[in-house]
Length: 309
Image (tube, rainbow, N blue to C red; front, side):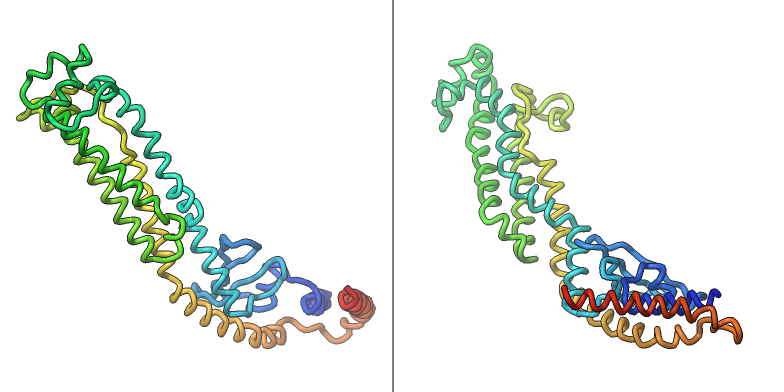
């Protein structure tokens, strides 16, 4: 009777969608090593691994192997982009500009208040002294060597980080269409990180935790502004992963070509696999006839119904 059910399985496989286990039983021998790896593509696709090698992609929704090369490449691309968090990284990159300006707002606002920069501009030594003298907290430090110079330098250099962030934001979404775009934006992020560190490397911010205090004057006058360096570094790393995924298009096409060839081989080989399955013993096949007749009728009705849709 088991052989009868096997025949029925093949009959239904020809008409109805196969499950993963039915596909495995129909295309591979019982002693062969076959595994499936779920792919992160829209749909229900699994990578078929035969003896550890890729041999195709199984579509669980249609219950069959994907045979079209372009479709295979598209599924592989979608899977790799999902694993690289392509869309999430693009969103994070497009939001970095606003994150940067929000992050620095609190720290710079405090420093502006302490330095008197809310009252006057600081463009040269004289104007910086006037600004500092407008705030009681700042006044005593005007006469300390290096303080006004540090204040003037920070007031000038902080705009350089803004300029780099503004440059990064220009065309950021379009940059995700090419590896070259990712390369350029990644380099701009590295520039932002380096410039932010340079701007914050000043005695007006240094405190006892900074190594520079061992040999230089540390004022610890106001908190170091947050220029989003941590977020920029994290984003730069993610963009490198996305860049790698974009660059893998040639390899994906090659994989798709090889998988199509192997899938065609599997289709052909499945005929031999079917022949090697246990056959009904003489005298025991009669019980299959009514079941096959009913199944055949059901299959015919299903096909006619499908054609009318």
